Structures are given as structure tokens and as C-alpha cells.
Image (tube, rainbow, N blue to C red; front, side, top):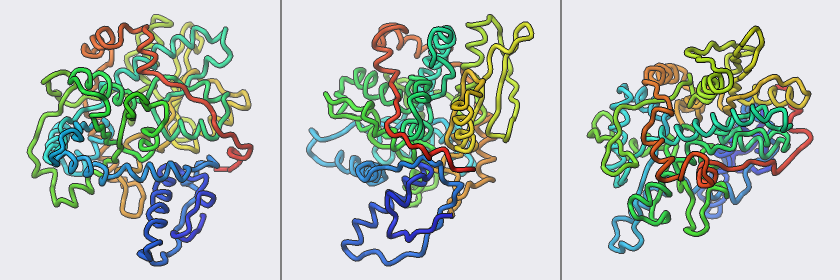
Length: 460
């Protein structure tokens, strides 16, 4: 393990750590620097950082990024809430909170509620603070899945004409994206799907579609996302998710599920005592019904949805159930489709940086056989994000995580193709599925910004 004095964590010392851990260290360093000037911090005991926390990225956040991430905390939420209480209405903001589907099982399991009750009580709590709208980001995941499905089929059809068409890597996980951009070459980043993540598509929906519906300028909306991991805070800061015309990010602030629970504890509020309030939708005065999710054991189900869609579109085969084959470990699994004795589709799910690094090494050696890989930075998937289900010493709360997986598995599945609101928005808001506006609103690009020769040399 690495040992360093907690008061002396520097960018050099912390380089190469898991992004969630980097965020903790950089935020803590930011606090130390500010308070040490006032002699408010005593010397602390040595902090231990295990090599298992390291992703060998060789590149941490800059000090500027650390400062901006530090601003994404509960105080920023309350700054806007307090601003809205003042008489100067010209500075008031419409406060909208969007909740990720992988956060709801955490609240349900932690407070022993059904996932539907947890969603309504969480909505009730947020609105008791002064939040105006509370949304579920499942609709944004619908868009992301549909765009990813279509892009994969197009890449597959171009595979013989374009060298970098396949494999295609999922783009929903910001930890994986940052690793790819900061460490890997354009050889890898060119294979990342261009569809935005559900978080950032939700940002486009709230600051674009919803703002227009409400006749609001995007900068008049303060958009908060509740997510299972800290990496989402960095994703919200990306320059490609900023609109200069309105000086507005698509997502203004990300709070983890655990940070919301901290607010409850500070206010001495229990979820069980909160009044249930139906979750809002983006459509006039409609309210959300029961919570739904997408196919997928521990994620938004990119592998399963794209696999089934590709099987039907490319080979005319209807796949009802998918059989996973575990390879080296439970976080690296593959799925194949055979037709006439030939394997025509080979997909994989790679969770955690141990598996991601092995995957990239195979690709660089020319031994990569997969057409698509669902890549997630957290071992165990999104439910295991470090912003939730952690014990006080920072380790996964396995008992709570098992409950969360049971809760998540019991949520009914909805195919993105069956969402009539999504189909209507494609026509009314995005001007058709193949329009320029779809590319501008639902897609982005990724490219390597920093490459190092030694970043893949660490043996896990």
C-alpha cells in the first residue's frame, strides 16, 4: 500500500488512484489547504491507500478540477435553496433533481422500503427542502440505449470498410471514459460509442426539452443529479456538456446517494417519516407511475439490449433470454450468438479496472474477439458505486449490497422501444431519429488527451 500524511496529499502522490478515491483525496486536500491557512487542522495520522484502489491511470484531477468538484456538494444545493428564499426574484432558480435508477435500490434497502415507496418518499423529502421538480432518469437511459443500439448496428455493417468500427465500447460510465481519455490511445477511444450517458442526456432533456416546455432559459434551471458514484461529478464538468450561449452546464451539481442521506441525518429526518409525493415527469402535469428499469443485472443493461436488438436487426433472430458465461471472474462475462454453427456476435461485460486493463492489453495485442463490451469502472456494477452502500471505513457494505441487488432485480423491466413519450419526443423535439439535432443533442465525441507508456505496466 501507499502511505502518505493526509495533510500532504499531492497530485503527484495520489496519481493513479481510482477516480472515486481521487475525488475524496483532492476534495480533502482542497479543504486542508483552505483550513491550514487558519491553523484549523491538526496533523493527522497516516492514511493507507491500497494498490487495489489504483487504476494505473497516471493522471489525477488538476487543482482546478478539484476545486470545481468540491463545489458540487450539499452546500451548493442549499446555496440555491437559500437564494430562492430571498426577495430578489430575478436571481431565483427552478430547482430540478434527477435520480438515477441505481440509487433508488440503495434508499429502498437502507430504509427497508419498497422501491416505489422509496422513490415517493425521496421525492417528498427533496420537495420539503424547496426542490421544485424531481425526475427519474430512466427516460434518459431509454434514449441512450436506443442510440447505442442503432450505432452498434451501423458500426457492424461498416466493419469491413472501417478499421475502427468494431469493437464498440459502452459510453455510460464516466470512470471508464476518463481512464480511456487520459491513459489510452485514440486507437481505443475511437471505439467508444458516441451516445451520451443517461446523466448527460437527462441534462439535455431538462435544460432543453423541459426548459422549452416551461418557457424558461436553461440558465434559470439549477439541475442536480443524484447518482451512485463520485465519478459523475467529473462527468458533469466536461466542456462538451456546456452551453456558452447561456453560460450553463447540462448538469449543475451531482450529489451521491450517500450525500443525500447525510442531509437527512443533519436534519434528523427519517425516510419512513416523510410524506410520499409522486415523482414528476417532463410532460406537463403528468406524474410517474411505478418504478421501472432496463434489462441488466447491475446496470442499465447496454449489453442485453444491444445484443437482442442486433440479433434481430442483423440476423433476424429473436433472443428472449441471454446466457452469460463467466470467464476469469464474475465481473468478466461473455455472451455469444450462433447461427448455422458460426458465432456471429460475441459480447462481453467487463466490470472493474482489473478486467478493463486486461481487456485493453488483449486489444493492443490483437487478441480481442468481442464486437461489443459493456464497460463499468466499479466491480459489481453501478449498484456498487462508492457513493452508496459503503461502510464507515470505506469498504462495500456487502449485506446492504445484496439487499440492493434483490430490490433491483425485482423492478419490472421496460423496453426503451415501448416508451411512447420517447418516440413522440424524437419527432416533436428532435425532428426525427436521423436528424442533425439528434446528433447534436444525444451524442458527443471522445479522444485521448494524455498518453503514458507505463500506465498499463502495473500487474494486478
